[in-house]
Length: 257
Image (cartoon, rainbow, N blue to C red):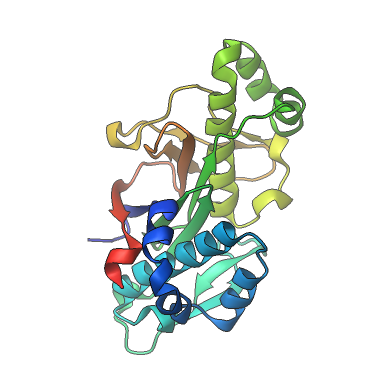
């Protein structure tokens, strides 16, 4: 059950579900809004377009399940984020007539990357998720310098060279999930945010988490990591200093159509 002290995480394997659902592309696209379909059509590469459609259809399937409405009827809106009284914009839901009060404050976050998607759903608290493919990086050192706080950079450079790529992506998803939770994305200064630096994950199953430090904002935000295949990194960030009950589930989009 989703309540104010819980977060539900959904993992979607886009490569498998997009391939399996290719014959059902019309059904998936039929769940999306005209704007979502326009964005999908902007992708020139077929696999990227299919993954976008699959990820956004998955989000609609999941939110529709909570709201008790058809996926195509999930009422998205662009509005003011409700984080610390800020004026940032982030995706949200419009009110749905007839829903009980327990569903009136549903929050969500979506991230997708090379072959995978992550969706976080929470009630009455902000949530952010991020998943990244650990791609090879010839420019790893200069990128790390440009995005890490001085504390992070010192800890990262102390790692063994062979551990630095994985640690970089763990750091990146932790930081990006926080930026999504507060509703600003990469418009926020990355170097003002400090998260743990480690080659190992903060495993959400063992309730390992850390408090995000942000020199530019006040408020408490927790972050933990979602177990995913070794080629990926994935994190969730939530509003509040205490760790909520986090449930991780898998979704096969093709099996829901």
